[in-house]
Each structure stands twice: as structure tokens, then as C-alpha cells.
Image 1: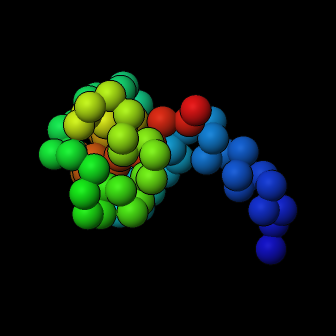
Image 2: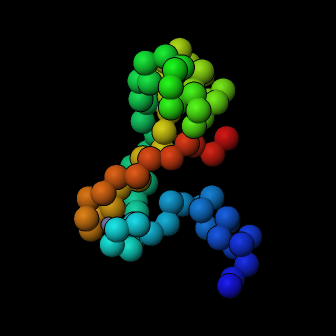
Amino acid sequence: MSSPNQTDEAKAAGYGACLRCGAELSAVGLEKFRVGGTSGGWKMLFGELAELGEDMIELEVFACPSCRKVELRVPVA
Ligand SMILES: [Zn+2]
């Protein structure tokens, strides 16, 4: 068991390794996604964040250069 603090810091710096193949994910950048209002799962997942900027939400996009899997996450405020 390693320190949980170290794990948190690694996640803050970057997305880390691909969940599928373990390759390092590369940051693509911020993309705006339309969430169609503040209903349903988005509101549940992101709360007030889903209400920012009309019905658009900004997510960080990471792509795996190996298996092409794409990961999304809420940008660090
Ligand atoms: Zn991968």
C-alpha cells in the first residue's frame, strides 16, 4: 500500500495511464460539450458545474496513443 496522497497528486498532474492497455494518455485539450440543459445524469455527476455556460460543459479530453481510447474528465478548477 503506497501513500494515497501520492496517487491524488499524480491524478492532478495528468490523467495517467490508459485503463485498457496501460499506455500514457496524452492530453488533447479542453472541448465544449452540449449537455442539453441541466437534467439527468449530468446534474447528478457535476452539480453546479453542469449549470455553467448555458447548456455547454467543458471537459478535458485525453486520448490513448496506443489503443485510441478517449477519456474525459472535469477540468480542475
Ligand atoms: Zn490504451
